[in-house]
Length: 118
Image (cartoon, rainbow, N blue to C red; front, side, top):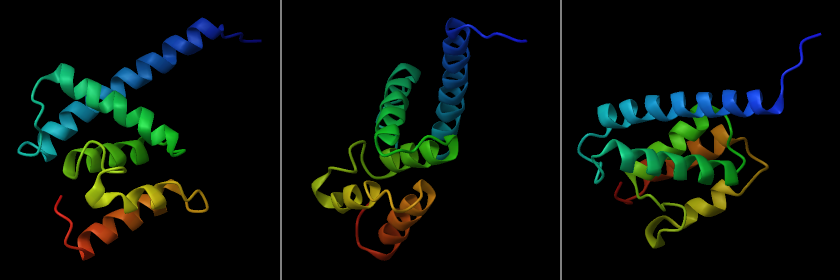
């Protein structure tokens, strides 16, 4: 029987998280080069870690959902879910009757059909 110690599991989680953060840095620099107020990798890492934490607070744990949440942070505002212009997003994000994917799609659809500046 294979036994994996809890320390090993934590190391694997950290390794996976670091790989995700590195992919997100590359992704953000590629897709949002003019939207990033923060140019240093250290600041981007901080933003991404904040995005992971915030997305998790809305029960978003799949990488693709967390990545889209971080995209919205960059495209709209780092605190888009509580920004006065887009505070309506908070209501959608906390509606756990919808999947994370559906909540994000609903926000993106609303942004595309409204006059909210991203």
